[in-house]
Image (tube, rainbow, N blue to C red; front, side, top):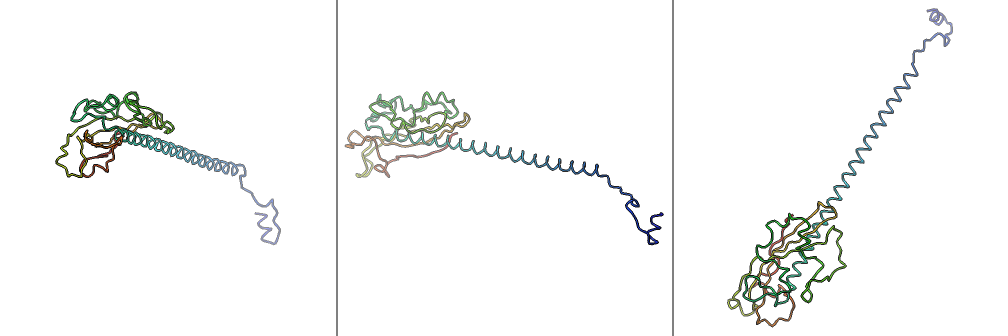
Length: 245
C-alpha cells in the first residue's frame, strides 16, 4: 500500500514494488511434454505409412506373380494346340473311334474320360508326370526340345495335357465339291498348367478345339493342317476357352 501511495502522490516505483508470480520450471516441463507428444504422433504416422507401403508392395507382388502363372498356363494351352495341329496326317487311323493313334503320339493324347475329374486341383507332381512341356514338339516319333531357350520365371515349366473328347465321322459326299475330303473331326480338350514363383500361385486354362482329319485319298503334302482350308464346311480351331483355376 505504501508503494501505491507513493505512486499516487508522484513517487517512483521500483522492481521490488511488484510481486512476480510466474513459475518458470513448471512452464518448461509442459512445453517438453507437448513436444514429446507431437514427436510420438509423428512417429506413429510414419510407422503406419511404412506398413501401408509394405502391404501395397506385397499385394502388387502377389498380383504380378498370379499374372505370371496365368500367362504360363495360356502359353501351355497354345503349345498344346500347336502340337495337335502339327501332327502328321497319318497319326490317326481312319474310321476309328478308340485307341486310334500311331505309336509315336498315343502316349500324348489321352482317351476320352481317362483324365481325373478335376485335374486343375491336383498337386504339382501329377502335372509334372502327365503333362508335356510347352517347349517340346514331336520330332521323329519322340518329344524333343525345340524352344529350350524360352524360359518363364515360374517355379515349374508350363505343362499341357491333351484329351480326346469325341470323334465324329464325316460324310464328305454330302458337302459341296469345293470342300476338302475328310474322314472326320476330332474334338479335344487341352489343359494348360502354369505356376508363379510363389508356391500358392497356380493357374489352369482349358481349351476345346476341333481338328479335321483328312481321308487317305487326300493329296495334301503338309505335315499339319490349316483351319482356313476347312472353313466354313467343318469345325476347326478353338471352339471354347476358359479359366479353370
